[in-house]
Length: 592
Image (cartoon, rainbow, N blue to C red; front, top):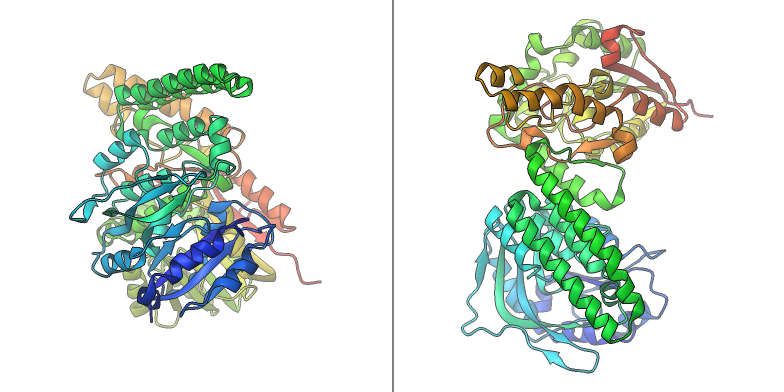
């Protein structure tokens, strides 16, 4: 079965789409190496779909995904990629107003066939077609020796300084890479390809380049890119991307990037005044202010370093790609055997347990008298074993991300059902469980609201969702947030005579972090998470909650549950320990 698919994103392209599809038909026998072509249309108001269907006569099927409303190119693309069948390993993109030159498809598929596992994308050079028919030639290197760009910090920095040298519409990309780095970034209309490339290189994926122009890219002066450029939107988005990836830079490099954009704005201002484009000239003033603000903010972030609060609302649609990348990084952290052994030993250590919270959780589960129960984040099965010893006879399903842990559980507890997975792909149908519970798992999720929704969906009407998690706001502790200039404690610094370092660590611990936690929802939005948890730092010591990325709070989870029409209670009452280590029981409304 072919492992390649071609995606043609479209929006109001009735005048171009036939030419685009004819350029694909001209690829000849190479088309048969693909499984299908998808026209993913973003609710065109013209006859793009009709023209495409009338034009396509190829040897492989043309599938049409027609959106009911316009969502933007990247949202359209992300949803299309999410629908690809499991056997598709690579996808090619050809926008509906661009054209493939002879040999485009064959060159990319031949290179993809021999690519090793670290190659995330392969692209060619391209020509630019202006509205007046003028063609600006791309690269035609002889011989066209394939160049490889490694995914590392040096190339992330080089790409930040150089700009985007990759084009999504002239490449073949690996589906697994796309999903690992979180897909295309919503909210970046002009610089999304650049951000995607930077995330790909930063995640360690290599890029291969065929130095021959095999695609014709159509410039569209009436398009969103050209309009946004005239409004200096490119400057805003460029600096947003720089802030996202500035970890590889130093203050001098950050200053050079901002100085360049100030100079560019000055030239635009002069040009606009000469051409009497008063609106564009006026827009340079607030844009210049934004550049200065970004410069100061970037330098502040550089100075803070690991102390920076890189928090974001997990409900922000524009942050979806960064959250997906964080989620993948956390899965890797939990799934690595070496990391998992240390982590599991810490979890199973009685000295690190919360006996009151766990005891009350087991009582709450047993009170439901469940026939079916599911535990998400079951670990080594400790709670299951204790529930059985206390009389539970329910059909039990345990879900855990680590294959090694699940394999061990299957051997020790064959009577139960064990699955490798996450809350995004639970192994039971909706509304089938009398009780679903998760013990100190919620705070480790990059999408906490989605986690809650997925678990509650599996609970029968009238059933219970029981959760244990730390209240970060009440405890004033957030273990994944780096504090101080390094990982040493204030006491260690003071004993070593490093008074300044000790003072900074004390300030962060006693004042700065507690204040930020209290105001996290107001400052960052609902269900805030830490994009740069300490657990992902090289060589970090595995300690409790060093991997807790959601700033969990009893109040927020209770508010969410009540908004779903659920009844909320707190088993164990108001014991001070259960205020900090929350145990919440959410009762789903009974069926009418």
